[in-house]
Length: 257
Image (cartoon, rainbow, N blue to C red):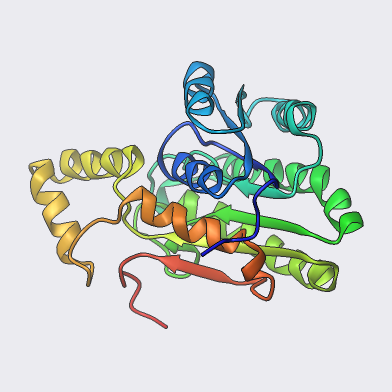
């Protein structure tokens, strides 16, 4: 299928690995010009060098002025941004009883407020042109809170509420705003979470992974490329009537419709 987005410009946050990288690669395969970004500058440039039209930008979105720096670099490299993929590193694992107000404030700042600045930088142009795609790489914790990931559950749910509210404002202007919720996708982040669980429960990490796979109806962890393909579709011309919603890519993990 031709997704109808060749020649569009995309800024993909936190795309030097994992789901962000998979999304950047999937968009590039569809002819999209891509800004690859992340704290690992050399890695961002290396990935960009492998893509047809791409630029690598080193940036820490959680640092003061990080969002503004990324927006400036992206617009200098590509001009107008048609597709914005919001993504960021997950907060540390913790249960709700273990976190305090400062932890929560940091999670909301990193997972909502920074992304709100990025949206604010590209949305006026999208509305003026009558076309835009806002997509957040979120978590299944938005729909079913994940034990021991309270900070992620809180911060990403706040972002979900913002994008849902925003989608109502711009739905008739050609701009969509959606979330893509991964389940257990085989990334470094998931490996680190499995390792933390294994250490906490004093189990071999192989046993933790096997237990995780057994809980998924598909009986396996997802591949990043599978997630990236779904993300690319949600950014496509064909997804123009999909907005204000959360789509799961989880192998059936979440036990609700």
